[in-house]
Image 1 (cartoon, rainbow, N blue to C red):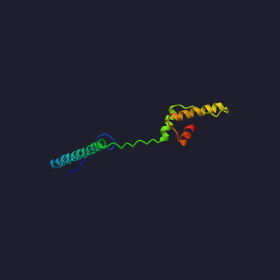
Image 2 (tube, rainbow, N blue to C red):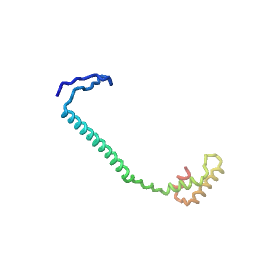
Image 3 (cartoon, rainbow, N blue to C red):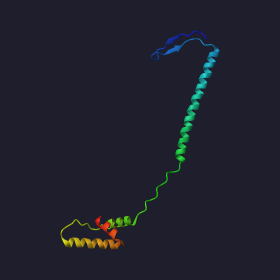
Image 4 (tube, one colour):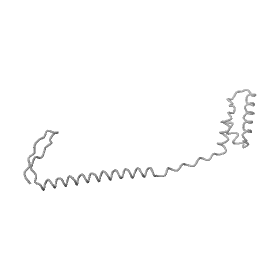
Length: 128
């Protein structure tokens, strides 16, 4: 190996260019190392791309998450929905007895129409 001489090239701060004369063997070694480095970089790139593709395929082929079963509706929920759908009258609390009796009669008619005979469901609908 001969002594090297470096010359500033002006392509960036502190960059130097090697101007020493190389033998044929050194030049071949340098070419082989460069080719090996290029092959290594290519293998790394391909392995990364292969991993990305595998992850994508696993994601696409994964079975969908199970759908939770629908919540079972209780009788109270069904009755309340029907009662709300019929838009039963509301009672604000007027001191007039006739208004209160009229409201009670309309609510009783509505509950009978949807087939509610359980006392606790009648109370739940009335206080709604």
